[in-house]
Length: 294
Image (cartoon, rainbow, N blue to C red; front, top):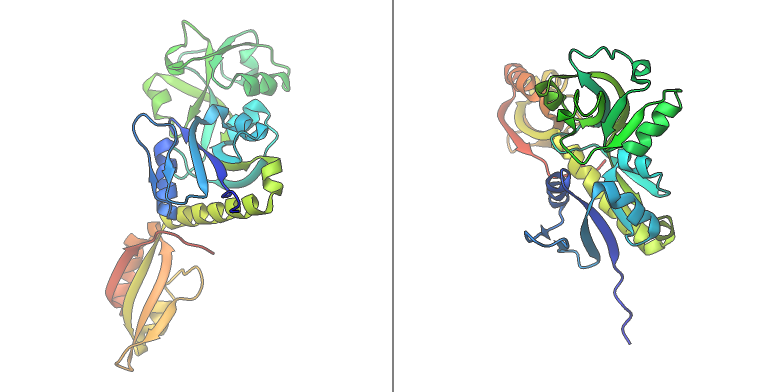
């Protein structure tokens, strides 16, 4: 009699993180299909079953064991005080590869200058629990209202201040708000149910997924470079290459020439390629990477 196939139940964040998360999984090598009205993305890996869940709710479903694992923000883990295993930090957000911030913001002309000035004020936010604990720890008593959305438009008529999530601050500035203080920095986390983490098969499956996701993220900011270098120019060209390790050097049919292959930070490319050309490199080819696994 055949044993039942082992399945890992994973939660993917629905909402602002959905597209960036699906893109990351696809770059990691997972083929995922999502129909417009379905909450159940289909993985090419038949050992993975997934469901789209709002990031705000993810941690409690993982904690309860309804899901074996999931991706959510550190902010929502803190908000719910969820008892889960944080497997890995994955530095990506809706618009980029940097952490996001929860900030206290007020109208530009507000008299509120510091956190202490929030005493007795009304604050609108979706991050109610954490905000209450944060202010209580600093002996600041304020009225915290849950915001169902469009939080930036609530000051000054519906709230004196807001605690809002921001990546760039552009939306706050567009609504004539200024930041008073950052109260929490958050990034995406891969979390696991503690009982599922103790299961040898599930743990290995999760560790494999995380390795590939981290490899895909590492590749986002790096590119590969191939070039031909004459033996007489090799030392000079090598001195310019900030490789992760030593460049791969292969001999060509012409014994006086080498082929160099190296991985570098993409931000360096604009200044690096002209320097390499001047140092004697030729046939320089830049190529994109799918994954970088240390």
